[in-house]
Image (cartoon, rainbow, N blue to C red):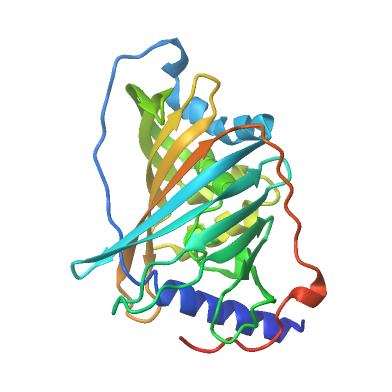
Length: 279
């Protein structure tokens, strides 16, 4: 695929998926909280800085994602489910877009493959043949693919926490029957990018520059082994068409750690090189 064609594809995907679906806003911001400290929660910032490395040690997991957006009284949610290999930074997800505003038709689930520096999508629509993949360089996206694909890469979500500047231990609770510690704070995407893995650094740098603010409020829940069980980020970006600030709440749930995961990336001949139709 020629470089010019790659840029055209990336631009079309970004405008079609983000402007078409993510040009709504999702909200959610909350204040600080506190709770009784225990031994493991004594240094919340340092604990969260290690969260991504702890996932690498865990190896793999299943994941569920949701991305909530609302604007003008209308709320939409994009949901995803899949598996992820944290050591290879590879994942495979099925992402379900909401119904059309008319409610007449539903989008087919989009298959997404997540890889260092790249997002692959199948069943993208917009004139792309059903047996072809669309490939997008995540560093070329203004949000680093934290929002564009409709599902935040689970390892990228963890690496955002490397940029935690402030954090508070809220207390003990449960997520899906698992005992966890709840932390709340704010991360800086530029700081996260500086400390990120080689595979995620450029995408986080793009997000730090492209979002309306590099500050990301978060709530995260760690189990007794320090693994993320749930993380919720609140991102803000500028809608390229309307120039208004869009708020997106992205939630990732991780479970069944250590299961076998095999993600195969598409061969070059299976990647679509044509123009994507406007939707």
